Image (tube, rainbow, N blue to C red; front, side, top):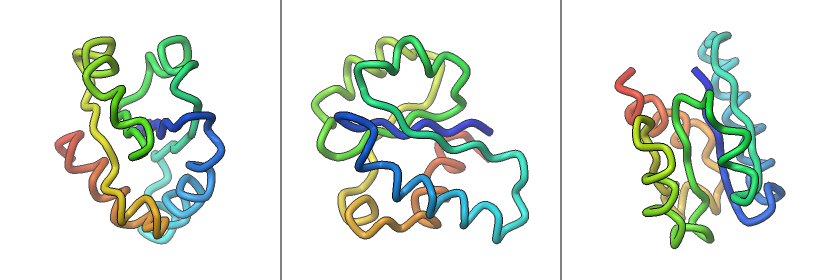
Length: 100
């Protein structure tokens, strides 16, 4: 499953990406690919994503991103999980959105 995290410039999500990758590895989930990118590059680079998660700071883009990626689950990461870099919780959220 490919999970894309999106924020203003792709930097603040990098810590969360590492935590999510560690949580996936701990669970033995080898088919999980987590990446981060700026919202400005989402359209060009996230077409193959299974789930798109927005950082709280770009929640204002939710409607536009949902419209662009109509067939994919798109949601905002809970601010407390984002701020505390709770990779396991965000990974669970992504799987729930994907119906897995």
